[in-house]
Length: 114
Ligand code: DGP
Image (cartoon, rainbow, N blue to C red; front, side, top):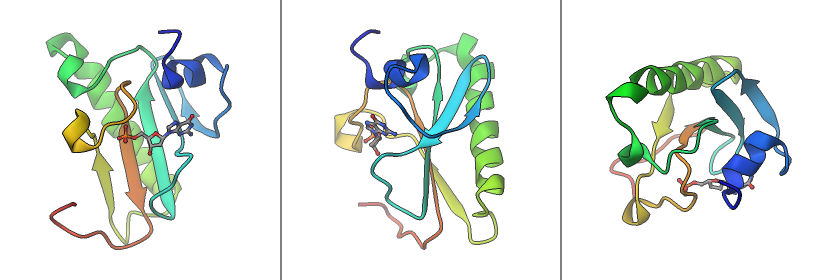
């Protein structure tokens, strides 16, 4: 989608610090980090949110999670613990409507989330 910020990052039209890329997935630093490590892992294909997925996306969704774990190991946040978040819909805090997983670590987190 031409007007989607994350599609533009996928295409290279908007710069981002890419940490991982394959044929279907990219990961890059969040521009507004909420923890020492805050990385976004996204599919290259435009999907609005988790609610836009179906059975045929199972492999892609698994790949996104595996990339989250890889990023966490590479960024050294496994020992302390980390959180993977998929804000889905406005009341959950989703502000960019292209599916993305947040990988957050490097500080303690509260539960339940705000
Ligand atoms: P969410 O609120 O769950 O939709 O998270 C969207 C995140 O995307 C938010 O933490 C800020 C980040 N973000 C928005 N625009 C850009 C951008 O142009 N570049 C980067 N690197 N991150 C962005």
